[in-house]
Length: 391
Image (tube, rainbow, N blue to C red; front, top):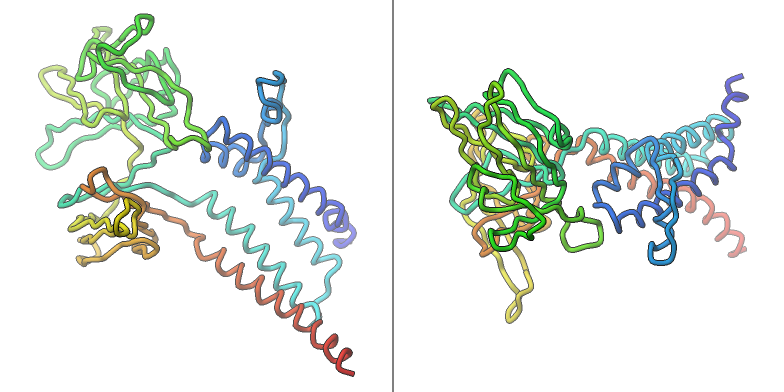
């Protein structure tokens, strides 16, 4: 009875169809990177149940404009379908025999690989930690999303920080209010990617809405979002926001990730700081950059190596040690991996990529299983062939 139910799911025709759909999805996702960023494409095409594929992707707009889109299974759906198809095939067609062990181990490795991608897609976290030489950092930044931070620095020991996530900032005309906020925040304009212009650079048709703060003499204009094929790989958002309290205006501010320092808002005799920044994740440890080195090949500007001598301090775990992080030699600590990613201009500091992936070992295990399975399978078939040839 169970085999009869599983037989349609174990079909080889279904396997071929799923592979064909997967190839088309990869093709469409590759074309989509001409217009969207890599991480946007990964989330929309490969880590979602379904995706709307714009038909214009397949024909350049200069040749013809094609309206409409097709609803297509995303990578999440296709991955689950392939996993079910493979498990059903083993339950229906494959028998546990010595000669079949190679194929079984190989397929188990493929199953592990699919499971590893699900774990990575659901649980992996990634950010960057920027540290100036001689200074310390205890947080990472996610450069794929932003947040508006309102800081009350009046506390004797710690600052009180209220954070507004990006998804609440992307609706012009909306108002954000909360008991933790000292004032209301009205969203006048949101720019997913922006450019900051000086007083003499602003075009006449672009009115500067800001009348308060450090950026009142500047202006922001929206620019196209970064794609997977251009040089700019990071969107730098900006927004015009108006602050009010009991319908009394406190000023309109231009906030942007471009700005390097927070702006001060004086309200009820108290100074608050507001800042649009990349999303932060604070850590229970601190990393101090002792020394950063950037070595070049002799006579060139090509990097031969760059490394960071850091001091890791985690008081809760009584950890205080120095570590050298350099290319292809990361630091692993508390379930996170610290890679030497880049450096600040003028070699004044380092940029570490911090990755937390509970399933980071699964691809290695699956590749080992696939290799063992293939060697087992072809080894068993090679021996009789060699004996027949020798005889």
